Length: 342
Image 1 (tube, rainbow, N blue to C red):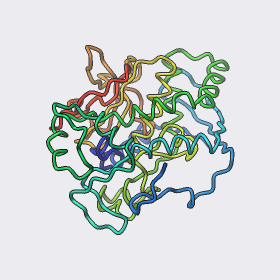
Image 2 (cartoon, rainbow, N blue to C red; image 1 turned 45 degrees about the vertical axis):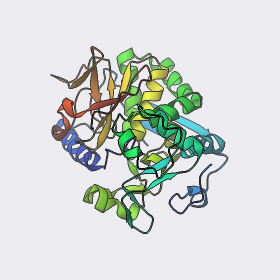
Image 3 (cartoon, one colour; image 1 turned 135 degrees about the vertical axis):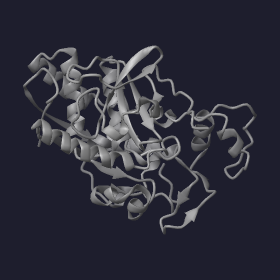
Image 4 (cartoon, helix red, strand yellow; image 1 turned 60 degrees about the horizontal axis):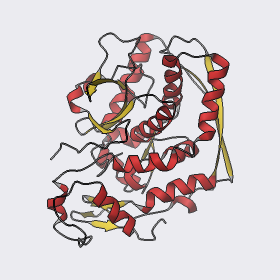
């Protein structure tokens, strides 16, 4: 979920998506299945909490119900723990907290600025537009208030993990290549196969703070889902996602952005402050939805694609379909447009 750089998603939106997705599938009668962290108190490395084998394998059987293909797909991946930790640690190396911040004991700290490294501070500078010399800014400098309002590049953290992970996903590309070779999918159906793979994986909630706070912060629906505490930026990298085999909306959007750009699709990541949610946008005309929803960006139409439930291209939950409330945070040219929320 995004809290600063992705802080606008406080998770209300994903819950409504799950409700409407179940309702939609019941109506349609379609169901498809398939099998340098820091030692400070406010960041908890999960290495002591989970045991990760040298190689972890996951497999899935799924069906792309909203495509022209009637085939079911099956695939498996194997990922090394070293790749997982490299990706996780790289994200942690430039992570920092920006207020509002809640510590592990649940205490509200309204003006907390914590940088874990010089990399983190450089990251903050590069993720903003500047009209002042900020080389001498300290972590607790009040001038950050002014600088941030110049312009925030919300997608910059996604971009960094995308660039780091995109060459570490050969185990994923190989699986999709084998499926394509076996089934001979059209470009439209190939994209559907990839997105439905992600839609079928179980949902969970990575949180920057303690999972004990998820109901207070995100609503009662969050109490019903699996959760992981103290995750930098509140989402998993593509490599983390494949090993953990679960994730939230911007975790999935980033993974799909990375994979689909590998296959030369024109895609964008879309975040919404209003809906507290993240989706994918793709420059690919839907075939199953009348009057599909799209975001116009750089004189092109990017059709909305829900990533947390099995929805067709071009359709969103009824309470999330005003496309003016969606913002492009990362585009196919790896530009991170400046947020307009200030």
